[in-house]
Length: 203
Image 1 (cartoon, rainbow, N blue to C red):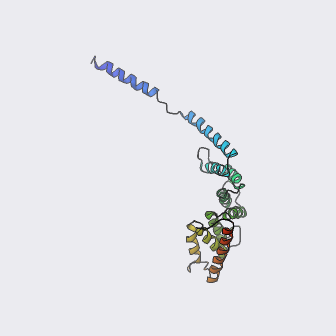
Image 2: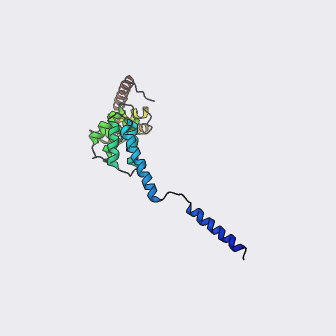
Image 3: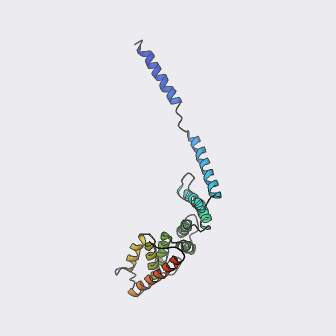
């Protein structure tokens, strides 16, 4: 017993010392560090590129490093969109269509998605198809909807193909005529020619 007690005492002392030397960050230190990272992100975005500004908007949208804040995300997306960054233009289209961080405004959604689509942004083309398909912000127009779904597919957004084919299917409630499908395909070809002339091309 006399020889075991000192060993037990030494072992307990070492355990206490190891616990005391544990340098895991305390919660208040984590908050300070997070605040500092957020400040650096703001500084980088204010002095950086349109992509930097867009990335900060995405952080506010998703609550990464900074607290989730849709109006603040929209503000940073707008700054990026004003520099013709298509992903930011699409985000403003999406926010306007959903009324998230911005008042719901289908006309604004059409405007921003149109600007992004003019740069070959497939998801923006798909959104335009949806707006024409549902008649949000514009009169319902299945020809224009088919055209935009078709273009979205051509520019790499695969969901466009599914909705294009669904819209033209015989059992669809809207039942596009062959002439309407032909007109939609013609409009898509003409629009694609215009895109290629400005340096964009489909996939």
